[in-house]
Amino acid sequence: MSRGVVIPRGGVADAREFAVRCENLGYDACWTGELWGRDAFVTLTAAAAVVDELTLGTAIVNVFSRSAATLAAAAASLDEVAPAGVRLGIGPSTPKAIEDLHGRPYDRPVRRLHETAELVAAFTGDEGRVEYEGETVAVADFPALDADVPVYTAALGPAARRATGRVADGWLPHNVPFTELADAFGTVAETAREAGRDPDEVTVAPYVPAAVDDDPDAARAAIRGHLAYYVGSGEGYRRAVATAFPDASERIAEAWRAGDRDAARGAVTAEMVDALGVAGTPDRAREQFRNVAGLDVVDHPIVVVPDGADETTTERTVAALAPRRESE
Image (cartoon, rainbow, N blue to C red):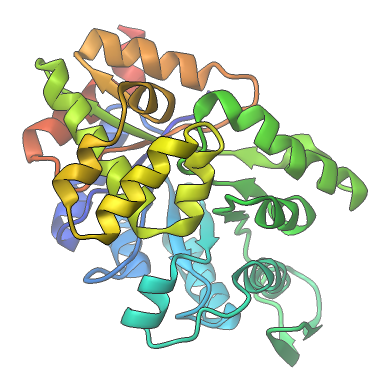
């Protein structure tokens, strides 16, 4: 079982140090997200210079602020210096990020995800010149880049999961309750088979929000903050959580929209924390993480320490859930 970890937000120098530490702890991959303030590809290129065995991945970059060609070129360039390969995780993000930050219309996000994944795969392939005529993008007569860059999609709803089954190499679910991952992947698998693909070749790499603290209440509070933020700020995330917690997810979203962050965090139930995260003392967190990693559908669980967690919590979490810590 391979295992990854998301690089916390911060400076590029911090990301380099974090990647080295994760490699020493036995993680197989470091991933980085991208919202604002730090470029994912610059960060991973810096990390590539100081590690020897880590796979590097984006989890995620959005499909609106860069063209498919730019994504392909960035991933192919990174692949030249990454010691153990690159995984390109892409997703539609949210209207808030796309419209208010990038100034782009949040138009047909699932179709754009589908076509971007398909076109990036063509651009990073090893054959001929790329021609593509889609509904959101069309390109003509540019050479493929001959780079080995699997494309993973952050797909929550059924339509996005169907796109994953048709065109993606991996699936990055986030805020899908762990007990529902297998059923959710069923949509991916069914669509993959319809497209003549083997579902077993689609890597399932779920985000696992995690916080470790000697005080279990503090750890659980970190997960509540993480869940409140996502449920409150993204309708796709709210719908994913609502498959198991419809009433609670609506209460969280309502409080968040009203600007009452404390009420939103308070509306995250204990059952939600257990179903959507890993939280507690080191021993308890390791047990919970093993349960998630041991699900038949999971191939590559990714440790995600909530934004806002202090440096001590981040260090404890990454160390406690590290492969080498578990093998001791």
